[in-house]
Every structure is written in structure tokens, then in C-alpha cells.
Picture 1 (cartoon, rainbow, N blue to C red):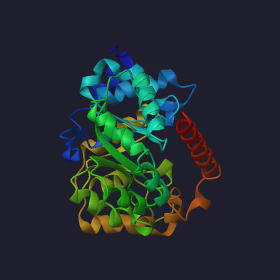
Picture 2 (picture 1 turned 180 degrees about the horizontal axis):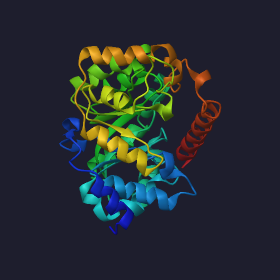
Picture 3 (picture 1 turned 90 degrees about the vertical axis):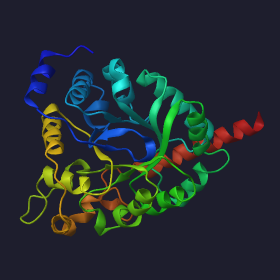
Amino acid sequence: MRLSNHIRTISAQISGPIPKRPLGKTGLQMTILGMGGESIIKEPSEETAAIELLQTAYKLGINYFDTASSYDLSEERIGKALSDVRGDIILASKAQDRTKDGARRELDTSLKRLKTDHLDVWQIHHIDDMDEVKSVMGPDGALMALIEAKEQGLVHHIGITGHYDPSPILEALQHHPFDMTLLSLNAADVHHRSFIKKLLPEAVGQNLGIVGMKICCRGRIFDPNPGHLHSMREAMHYVLSLPISGVIIGHDNIEQLIENVRIAQDFVPFSRNQMDDVEEKTKSYANLALFFRKDYEEFNPFWKAYPQKKKELKREMVEEHKKNCQR
């Protein structure tokens, strides 16, 4: 990897490692701060900045890089930026298609884009309801693609992700021995359809690798009013004080990355009183900080397009199944 002088200068400003934790039963060790694959990384006009950001994250010690086949340019840019250091990092991607064949096609595309012959983690992307659980866990469902890919060595560990409702994820975890899970966990979580209360104990009990997302939920976890949450340090340290492996955060620029690396390096677990205090700060605007959660769709700026996107995907899967049955 050829590092620019800018990256070398930035790296020299940061001293000390990012702490690591076991990624559950996988045997992997994850830095408690991982790199989310959205934000600037997938922006069409920002390739140079995206690659520099990814390489800087690696140089600063981050070893966990999350992406998905549906994140547009994200996988391709991670492949360009980090293929030279593939053996040093944990690559995690996701499949959105609910069928076995469709998910496998996504995997083939992901491996090509990421310039690798395997994924460390491959996950079923954002399960929202019980119908999706039934679909992915059926005989022609996406889970079969994950199981087969793991048997073939194309992926080393498999998981499931969600942010909308904890109940479907809990159902899936109770019916298949996954290796890990990616969950929405933030300082407002306990106030509505809580993943911390309903789902986290099951995941901990199964010794899954547990990664938190939606830590600052595109900045909506913060509110300028007195007595509300203002600090990224509080937001991140709250989630890292839970019994999890680490968190992933998307970054728009190197300045955000440096700030979050320093926050991770300085992590000290919160006491129960500190956790309660942070939760109280987000209580009055939890509907905004949990805009991605079931029942709060009216506060989700992306929701109008989301149901239609999922309907189109379901229609495509049905048509694909019909074609396969006719062959």
C-alpha cells in the first residue's frame, strides 16, 4: 500500500493502539472501533477521498471494515484501498437478496469487488419482520447460501443484521447457530423496541460476535438543548460499555475519523449510573434518534423510498423463483 504524505502526517499525530476485543466465538480479535462502509466511502464523486479515508483508518489501527453488496461503490473502493493488506483486516459484507441463488450471486460480486477470495464475515442484511425470517430460513432461502459458502471456505463466519425490530432477529438466532450479529445499539435504544433489553442477552448467551451500529444515527443522537446528549464521546462510550465486541461508524472526513479513534483509545467503561444518565438525556427525543426503528417511520427521512425498494426486491425474487422452477 502506498501511503500519501498526508496519511503519514496524520498517523504520526495518533499514539497508542485501539483496544481489541474477541469477536465472540469466531476466534477473531476486533478493534472496538470499526469502519462503516457508507458515508463518503460510497459517494460517486469522492473516490480519492474515500480511498484515503480507508487507508488512513487502517494506518491508525482499525482492523474491522464493514460493507454490503447494496452499498453501491463501497465494496469496490475497499478493494482498491485495502487489497494489499487483506491479511491484516477483518472484511465483513452482507447480502440483501432473500433467496439462496440471489444471495450467492451477491457473494460472487462482493468477492470480485473486494479483490479477495473469501470474506471473514458474511451476513444476511437488515431483517425487518417475521415473513423475512421465514423466507431466508426456508429451503431456498439466503441462509442456505451462507451455510454452503461457509462449508466451501468462501466465508469464514456468518451472521444476521437488523435495526428495525428486535423480535425477528431474536427468532432467527433461536433457530440457527449464527457466528455473529450486527445490531442497532445507541444511547436512545432502551426507550423503544429495545435491542439492548430484548435481543442482546440472547446474543451474549450464544457467545456471538456482537457489533453495534447506528451509534450516532447520522447525527440525530445529538440535540443542542440543555440536558440532552451533545458528545460523541458519551455516545460511543455508552455503546462500548455494553457486552459487545465493538462498533462500526461511518465517517465523512478524516477529522471525524481521528476524533473517533482518539475516543476509542481513551475508552473507560461507564458505570450503571453513567449509563442511566446518558439514557435520560435522549429520552425526550428518542423518536428522532431511533428514526430507523419500527413505529417511527414518520421520522425517517429515507422511509418513503424504503418500502417500495423492498417490494421491488421481493417481486424480483418471486420472478427468479418461478424461472428456476420452470428449468
